[in-house]
Image (cartoon, rainbow, N blue to C red; front, side, top):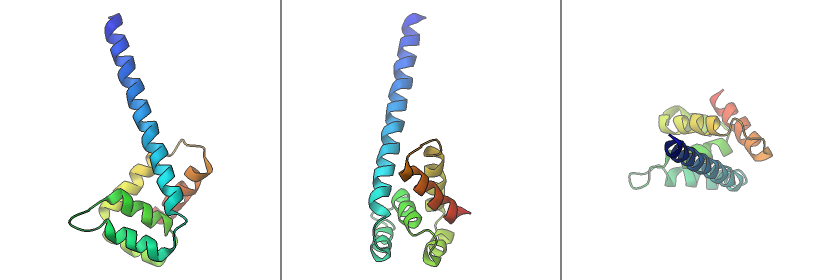
Length: 113
């Protein structure tokens, strides 16, 4: 039993490290995206909404950075994948205490609310 407990503990530690890394990457991306002008955010959204590159998380981040704009709400109404990504991001960062996480939560809540 001791060996299996060790293996299970290592698996949990690896999973936590991976989750922490994903959150860090998400917040780092948010810090870059949120300061971009709306024209660049629209370009970023469109680049990630093609047949060749269909990345709903990147689209979600662009929409979050444009939270409060009519255009962001219009795009979100048509983009269920981005809506799901926003909900997933919101869930992942719900316990984070940084100011960046707080700004991202507020932007997502504004869009989804």
